Length: 570
Image (cartoon, rainbow, N blue to C red; front, top):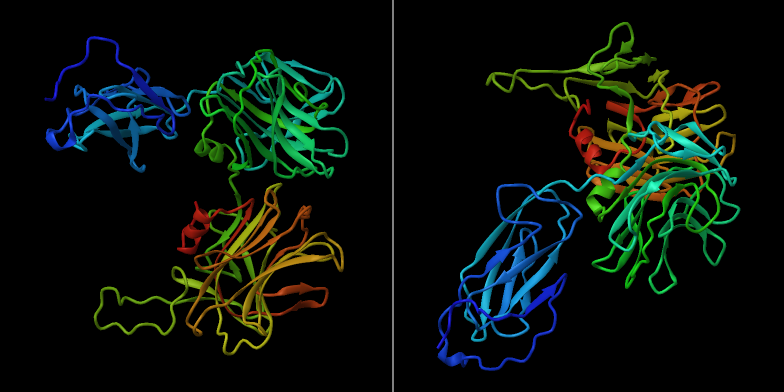
């Protein structure tokens, strides 16, 4: 017969962080055939994350959740987090409580649902346990050149450098690689416990020894050389056994910014390295040694002194989770120009929200067409509507074009340009240029239509000289006739060393690797509808163009999707 009520004597508890521990053999359990009574619903509790009306600490911090039932023959607990898959925990003996270690990765309200199951597979009612999670704790140590109070700055450090574009770090410190190239701060964290460290770094020289960007007696974040001599990003931890755990990944480039994160999770015994918001490597079965000394920037831990730029260093006494890492590594593209091409006056189409207009050349004009068919049943629709809004740029292919002195100038992260285009592939018998950005001797990039293959093609020059090598990406035009239009975008991502072409909602339609290439700063005017030549122009476009956007930096797929739908990106 089932006995209810809690045991007064000590009851064993099985604890699980990810999967359940072993299940001891059962003795004295009522035979399944004789037991048809469901066990009592489990009781759930947590000291760190109680079910109340308050938010509790927090993203990246572990807590213990205890699960128990008043029924003495419960052998298994089935549980499921909001949005997760069902899992089970087995008790160490019938009626024993179980517990699990849990770390939230998002703030807000979540819940845990639990059911108790006895040896006869009778299932209890479901218990729902609500947890309200606050944002992760702030960094225990933070440093940037604009706020270095309490730091000891060596003579080999200048605090007047420029930080990575598109971030919240406008300034950076320049380290000259000498013994005096270091900044010393107070003790940060005990590295035997969970901790995380991040920094924006830009190496200026990789030919010498390994370098430390951020170090403490318990870790080192910087660069190393692999067995082939190639440079790699590195996160190293001295271990409790006297060895060293090293996680490497990614490929540093001289003069190029990168966002680095090292994470040590003592609960999972795992060290992880992230580069530019993405996982670059991990080491399992790691038990880090305790290290509580001063935090040193540009030195410390393993490797030589840092030669390059450094900014926005943070150290947390918790796990910095993937969502936070991706957000910290995000570089916001900076809009350089947006022309909606709705109107023109005196041969100029204004830029949205100010800026230089597009000057129309040849017989180029703004085609505007509207009607009242949305509300007037007697309306006669216009034969062809503009692609977005009430107007677009009309080019006849015989010397028509537009220009603007607002050049598309890449940032240290890259560049992006997008446009809506309409042409008739059945009558387009020659190559036509949609956009081109001249330099002194060659075009930085060209976006064109290739007639022989009926494809869109984006081409980027590796340097500003005649005959410079180029990289191309292409995609099928994919329209049925003259009334169809397409959204086309070209993105050069310097951090990823990639050139990408996007067509409509295909993200990306084509991708090419461009390793070791830094886009040059062009000096010419942006060309719309042609390629500029010393004699004038060539490859004039016969068709329509609308919604032209240019950016310093990298547009992600979310931003591109908004622009494809006609968003202003104000």
